[in-house]
Image (cartoon, rainbow, N blue to C red; front, side, top):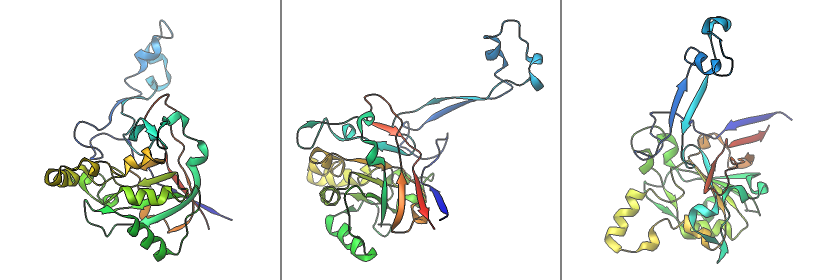
Length: 258
């Protein structure tokens, strides 16, 4: 049976709107023409002209935080504890079994920017696509933000997943979720307006904070979710192994048997 691979990851690149100002990656590219002096440090007396075509190696120096690019958040990112009091796992402690499994896509592109999805919204979408969740399904949420990646306003676009929506998934055995938005929760600019009116701090990061009660992970800044069917595909999203970290970069891929 032939397989199709769908890349669900964004690029790590300079000068593209993928994060709030000041939080993006910085990549310094060293070309073949710039690097011969670096090689000569290993081989005293070597001249640039001695190398084939006078070229050295290409290499890049990258400044990142663990939440740049498509990445997997560990329970430790959300809170210091999970499962109602246990020490929260860091990214190097996340079970690899969580990072490979059957995928399910919820299409929430019709919800407005800043909307907080509920358990009823999740249930209605599962009914619409005719799917019953099972343990260790990987649930991806396709929001309006996916189509705005790289454009001004990306980080404030799309809906978020609220506490009840997240717990609906976790209570059914889901341990890894994902979104094509900047955050699993609603964009901060919209939550800030609600907080100014109510001063209710429980509104802040409510989807993430569900991890205090049931430990879980989620992918953020996914891409190409609109290319996926509602279900019938496999997700692979093993994170980079960074000791004690709150997240790890991943090349998230959907695998579809056709």
